[in-house]
Amino acid sequence: MSLQRRIRARVIGALTTGLVVMLAACSGGATDSSSSGSPTGSSSAASTAVSNAASGTESDTGSSSSSEASTPKQESHVDVSMAIVAAGETPTAYTDEVKRFNQSHPNITLSLQTYPSGDAYNQALLGQVAGGAAPDVFLLDLGTQMQQFVDAKAILPMSGPAEQAGIDMGAFDQNLTAAATIGGQLYAVPKDYSTTVLTYRKSALAAAGVQPPTTWADLRTAAKKLTKNGQYGLGMYPQINYLLAWIDAFGGNFATANGISNFDNPDHVRALDEFLAMFNKDKSIATPQMTGASWDGEMLAKRQVAMVFGGSWVSGGVPAADASDIGEVTLPPEKQNGSVLYATGWVISAGSRHPDAAAEVIKFLTSDEELIEAHKAGIILLPPKASALDTLLSQNDDPLLKIAQSNAENGVPFGWLTSEQVDAYNGMLSQLTSSGTTSSQSAITALAKTIG
Image (cartoon, rainbow, N blue to C red; front, top):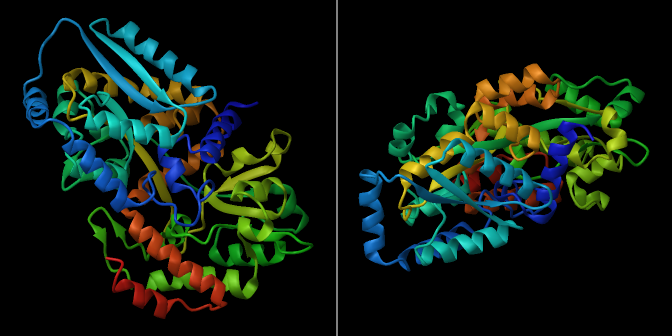
């Protein structure tokens, strides 16, 4: 199996069993229509749980960690712990990474805690925070989940430790650092991300005399032409998780780092009307529920659809024997390029006794050399630094890396939407797709009053 397929196959494993914190939350592939940026589901419930866990920590622990964060102890040797979700082959890859760190940092011993699922990871974190025994370094979704830990004062602001460790935050894609920033304060260093992509079967397009779409007119025409003989032209979840990219391409994005802005704008309406026309009028879009597939990648694998617009992990669900039949392109621009970013980041526990050493761990994990090595090992999806991505591009011709290069600069971080906003929007979409309408204006206007 090629390197690219091995990496994506691991992501598919994560999606189907909830093993990657961020993807288990953001993908429609492994969750129902209420999936959101929070791996724990309900933002309010999760926020309460994190707050309760944090309040379970003795008060002097919080003040002590704050003092130590500002004046870190200078010890000859310290022990630091790191927690991660890992299963299959990934625990071995992470263990190798920890070994590389320990060999290059004789004054710090890094230990690794791995959990077989996102649920197990989240439950353990809550218990550890409550007991004042959270790992020094752990991974969070850059969005609602991180907000919950910030609100509970369970993680440290990252700017000071990052600067002290010499982490160059300017080297990271600025869209990702923006997603790691709350209230003007940096709380995480980006680990990696996934994005949206249009994945297609070359043979299906060739048989229909269709080229990979480069305009929205091309996309609609291709989807209609490819819908025949029991096959749909395009597979897609009717969810904001992915439609946010369409809205962004039309110039109607409403998700910002500071919340929802200008929700009821005409470009938003145009984008959603285009989707509804293809879904309800052309009937060229299918969902997994319509075909009996378990997720969108399975539709492509079973040739139930010719194209899928979804996460960058979709092609990993296609059998290895069909790998040469798979192509990937960006979503066509309408007013601009449109894409969504699903990102995770490393954070430092507010209870860490050694935030300076923890920052050294994060510096190592996010160095170009380690990002490249970890990507090859399948534990980094898309690296969060252009320099590392450029190196990988020079070493192989994976088209996804080229797509990622563009999307990282222009994409909308999905974590900017709360789970309540995601649920509300997806509820609206469910009503629109089931009603047969091709007009979204009244529904968007109504939702604008309550969504934020």
